[in-house]
Amino acid sequence: MSLQPHKEERFLYPVYPLICVAASAVIDSFPSLFESEYKTTVKDLAANVAKFVRPIVLSIILGVSHSRTFSLIHGYGAPIEVYKILEHHDEVGHGSVLCVGSEWHRFPSSFFVPDFVGEVRWIDDGFDGLLPMPFNSTLGGTSAAPSYFNNRNKASEEQYLHDLDACTFLVELQLSRPYPTRGNDLSKWEVIAALPYLDRELSPSFYRSFFIPHLWHEKNVFGMYKLLQRIGR
Image (cartoon, rainbow, N blue to C red):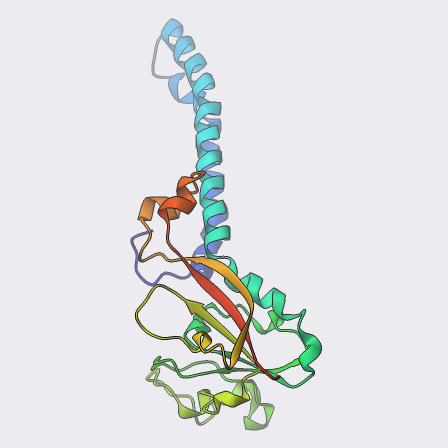
């Protein structure tokens, strides 16, 4: 399953409880696997060994699981944390515009956007697919398809905000790449939050997958997930 391209968590999570139940059933029945295969003396010995091995196997599973969970939370949790920080900057007043470029696919939900932000807008960073648009009840609600939708997943000009001066906030991921980023222009933008984000392309697969003390920070490469505010706003 890990080798499957373009998998999405929303399609996978329903099976997770079944995997946990199946794994716990196997671990619980570990000693009984030997009861019908051997004679009494050998059977008792095998069962005792299995009872001894069971907590060791369970401990290994728990250790690996915690290591994997820690790596995911601390390596890729920056998008959620950045939007939480946004709520502490309400001094800009209501009607602010939050702009998101290439990080549109990590935008968690409008529920993470505070009320003083009037709208979330996408800016063109080269993506040529169709992106979500603000809900507009005057176009027929959920029963109609607005004119800018299409069945070819082609980008619409209406989905982008072309006047970048209208952006109050900007969310951007800065990696060790040769292409420039908008947030580098410190004459226009002020960094109000910068959190490390694991760069999967430049980090070894083993060290980025599991947290190993000291080595996780030493071997992996990190970019900066930034929340920026336009100067003067």
